[in-house]
Amino acid sequence: MKKRRRIKKNEDFQKVFKKGKSFANRQFVVYFLEKEKQTEFRIGLSINKKVAKAVTRNQIKRYVRQSFLELDGELQQHMDYLIIARNPAADLDFHETKKSLMHVLKIAKVMKRSSRDQKKPHGRIK
Image (tube, rainbow, N blue to C red; front, side, top):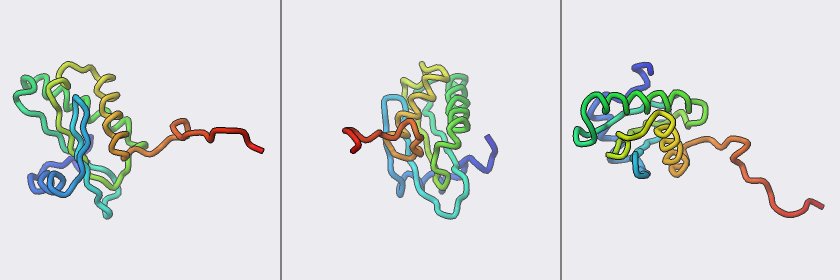
């Protein structure tokens, strides 16, 4: 993931924490804040030392970054996202991590709806 797509500064993290909205599942908490002038999303990652040792924390970060790269076309681009990993995230492989992130992003309604996700009208057409 390119550096321009990462949130690194503490003041940027604090803005998203204080002004953004948050949604969570068992593995991840996602904060997001809309930035109108931005053309592509940025992500910031936070994984506490209590979650796992350094090797596992770095692996979780790689999985999250790769998941966001693969979901690039489905995510709203003018946003800053902060992802906080919880303890159960240490036990996930890549596919489970991506599935869990997709779940929490759908709850947050920041993913664009694809044609297969749209509901079909019920009843008969006359």
